[in-house]
Structures are given as C-alpha cells and as structure tokens.
Amino acid sequence: MAARKIIIDTDPGQDDAVAILLALGSLEEVEVLGITAVAGNVPLPLTAKNARIVCELAGRPDVPVYAGCDAPLMRKLVTAEHVHGKTGLDGPAMPDPVTELQPEHAVDFIIETLRQEAAGTVTLCPLGPLTNIATAFQRAPDIIEKVQEIVLMGGAYFEVGNITPAAEFNIYVDPEAADIVLKSGARIVMMPLDVTHRALTTAPRVEAFRALGTEPGRMVAEWTDFFERFDKEKYGSQGAPLHDPCVIAYLIRPDLFEGRFINVEVETQSPLTLGMTVADYWRVTDRPANALFMQQIDAEAFFALLAERIARL
Image 1 (cartoon, one colour):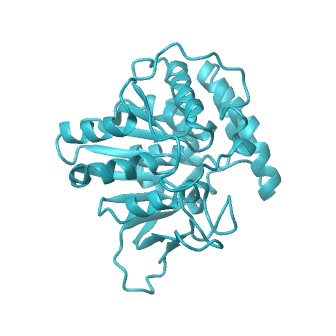
Image 2: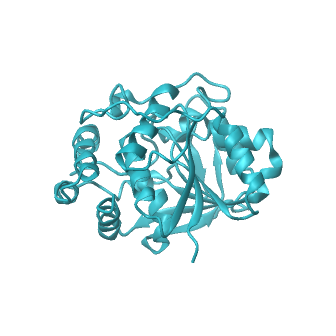
Image 3: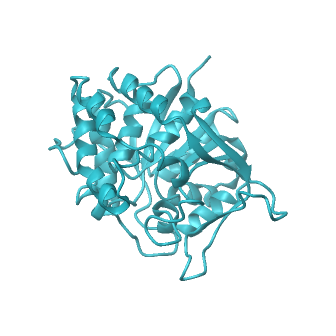
C-alpha cells in the first residue's frame, strides 16, 4: 500500500517536534510533502526555524519548510512560552538550522499542492492554530473537496480547557479559523485534550526514548524533561501529555484510538467561553455530524510506536 501523502501544519513546540519525528520515521505509512509553519506556541519566525531544526535532527533536510501566517485571522496572537520556553524548543541546546526556508508562502504551497495532486490523496495534519488551513480554504475553496482528510490536534469536551477554563490552546488562538475549518465540509478527525491527556510521558516512557542511544531519542527525552514540568505542576499528573504525535499515530495505527462521529462547533463570540469546542458528544441536538471526535487511546501501544519509529532516525 502506498504511503499516505501529508502536509504537516505546525507551530513547534516540543510535542510538535515529536510528531514530526514520528512522521519522518514512518516512511512506509506517510510521505511528508512539506511542513508549513504557523504562529502559535511561539511567533512565526521561531516556529519556522524550529521545524527546520527538527527535520535536520531527523536527517531529513530535504523536507521543505514553508512559513505561513504570522497572526490569527482576526485577533492578536496568544503564545505559550510559559509551557514551551522562549524558543518553543527549550530544553537541550539545539544548533541553528542550515537549510533555508522555502520562498513560497505556506498557504500558497497548500493550495498548489492540493490542486496538483490527485483529489483525495493529500491529508492535512494541523498541529497548531488553524490559521493557514482556513486562509487556504478562504482563498481557494475549490481545494476543500480535494482534501482526503484533516486530522488535527485541538479542542476538548470532557477536559474542557487548558488555556482558559473553557478552551484548548490551538482553537483559542484562532477560533475564527477553527470555525471555518469545521464548517468546511472536509472530512475531519479531531484529537482533543480528552484523548491527548491519556498519553502521558511517565518516567519509564521517557527513559525508553533516552535508552535508544540516538540523538533523536536523547532530544525527545530532554524535551520531555523540560516541558512536562508545567503539566505535572498544573495537573498533578505523573507526566505531560504528548498532544501532537497523536495526529501522526492515527495515520499509522488508527486502531489505537476510539471516538464518535459528532457535531463540533466553535464559540467565536462569548468573552467567557471564546474558543470552546461545543461537542455534541451525546447527540442531543439535530446538528449534523462533522468530525470524528476521539476520546480513547491505547497509551502503551502509542508510546511503543513512538519509540520504535524514533529509533529508526
């Protein structure tokens, strides 16, 4: 079976970095056509830089990286240095990337790729705010029907919020963009906090990365050592959730996840619940289903997959 063609849209972020490594270590299942950077965890110059750092760490400087939107559609950018550090990849010292950014804007790359590739053969994998994807859909609505699937990390229902009491970070940063994507009619799979908070980096799981004895394994362990301090303090948990790798893991092993096909809408008006994903998990309305909303993960198998694929790099 041919590898699935994907575009990773991202705002690295340590967990974004692990997701990119998982994809680049899974050549049989996924072919990364390009990585598009968006402002989110940190501003765009840093997310575009971090994406290239991760590709070089994986030994894949050939993967093209494109810089995209530097601010949400209608709002001032909110970032998360309190979680990821001032660079977005704080923790181990990382060399600056040698490879250059592609001259083309990320949104143009997304549009051109979807127009050039056969319909239904390219999956979009947003790991951050949905600004680039929504902008592409607004500029070129003809590409929406050509998308095979959108598998994204964002939202919450049972876990509610992690940046406000009501909202998950990626959706909160650009709720208008999320609203556009969820109403687009594209096939959507969502990895909300409800599933990612079940994928915790316990001490044995982190040591499994370190024990690989490779530079990518060491980096993953040290990134985790850095950013899990925030979640341990916040949630009182034994580790931090690895949010974004769930997106790539789903493409490789969809059997690791369980969820429901339901209606999900985004609050864009209320100052109290801005960015909330209103998920009709119990199907109490007649609003049409628009997303496969995940809730369960086989965490042991997920971390085993991560270790196995990162060991290949």
